[in-house]
Length: 291
Image (cartoon, rainbow, N blue to C red; front, side):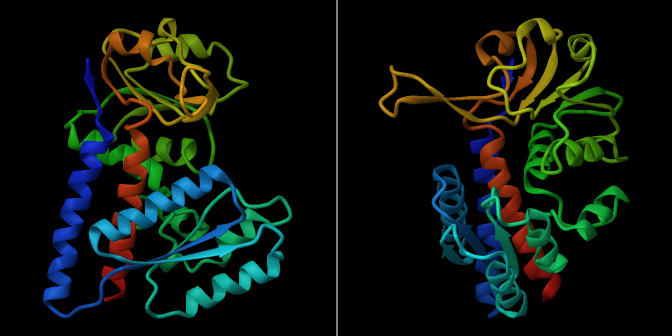
């Protein structure tokens, strides 16, 4: 069993980008600039945005963090995004989800210019991804593909089961795994909470991507020997033995599943760091395309 170390691959990706940014500076060219919009005071969102801003600093990107109160009107938020669209110095825009219930995620995503949509959620970018065209791929699925690529996992002909059908992870990663590429060329089954005989489907899988958001949902009796398991989930579970009062659990019962796998991602330290690395690659690409 080999651990797919997202921290290690993320660092390598950021180091590569740092060299490219240093070259831009040497040549007197524009460096990438990412604008992050944070609405409200959600603890998890604060952590995620903080990690993204820190990654920008490490690589040498410019970053702007815009904090807005959770009672901001939808129209006001959309006008903030419009002003970022018009700002020629800003290459990438991300609005941290989830948003307060009175604001439409769809309207916010659709307002971001496709050319600045480094989260890869705009319908234009999703459509290009489905057609196999060059575009901004959602950061978590992109990070998963980068991880598989780094460890030279040959996915050609694999039976892949994706557990979860969200627009952020499940659906896009199923498309990427099925494309004629490397990694890719898988036969993909997308499953969810209403799937019948899920256990049997998983037992036939060479590759499982667990993105259902239920702690330790994937048990050892659902995984065949030698499978590759990618755990996207991360949930805070109360744990009195921890100083923080909680433990971070993935969607996979790691201790029991790991011994059966050829490769597996840990939680934390697996997919999470790769999501940020992929976002940084998208931001660099946005700047590069503009130049």
